[in-house]
Amino acid sequence: MELFFQQVLNGLTLGGIYSLVALGLTLVYGILHVPNFAHGAFYMVGAFVSFHLMVAWGLNYWVAMAGAALCVAALATLAERLVFHPLRNASGLHPMIAAIGLLLFLEAGAQAIWGADFHRMPTPYGGMVEVAGVTAPVQRLLIIGAAFALMLALHLFLTRTVMGSTIVAMAQSRDGASLVGIDANRVAMLTFAISGVLAAVAAALFAPINLVFPAMGNLVITKAFVIIILGGMGSVPGAIVGGLIIGFAESFGAFYISTDYKDIIAFAILVLILSLRPQGIFSKGAH
Image: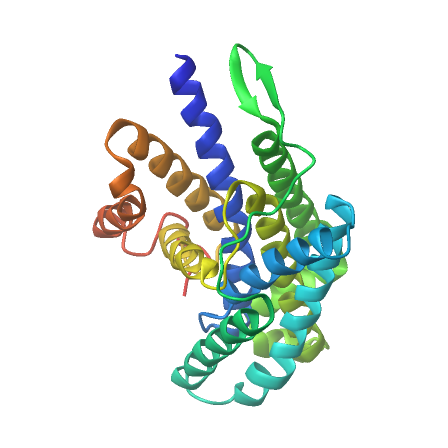
């Protein structure tokens, strides 16, 4: 049972990170209706900035995380203005190609600045605690607590605030939102900024138990696409549930089957669920 609960802890850790990344991706998709392949690069930049602020500048872990969130939010907003906004009236293929170009540009930039080596980000929470008879790393408990607190905060923002309601309205109908006086440009910039914050926080939380390197966002963003397709394109609850499904599947699959097949499990689940429910688990809001 102790090993079982250990896998539950690992599943919650992975699920929390995947859900945060997928939430930012699905919010942007709701506005643009185009998959943002550069979102994985935002995740990577968040990890490198938090790593740099801690190692080179000696800042506190939480200050470094906040600094990374601000930097990536500014970067995502700038990307929306310079890359995606000029292509708003183009066919869906053009923004996708632009997003891939932005991904490659940011990866090359990170490699030029920080090098191609693998880095280990330090953390002040490297200890172990015992919870209900299960020995758990403090960093993993921190990831679970912070990730789900951020998901709750995002839910309250989208459902209880005027600005959040404008994002939901834009996702439902861009033309309808414009007719009632909602500034589409402002909402698009805000959505990209929120997606950048979510990616950066996820990266800063996960970096201490993972390695930091220029291509680190590629596998994460691939799984994030699996999650939002699984949950239903454009569905916020679907991104959370899909992230947890993939996180638990990877954790238990790696333990009971083999770690060699850990990354394949997500795609096997995608094929299985979409063969039964092609529109995803949460079809409402899917496009």
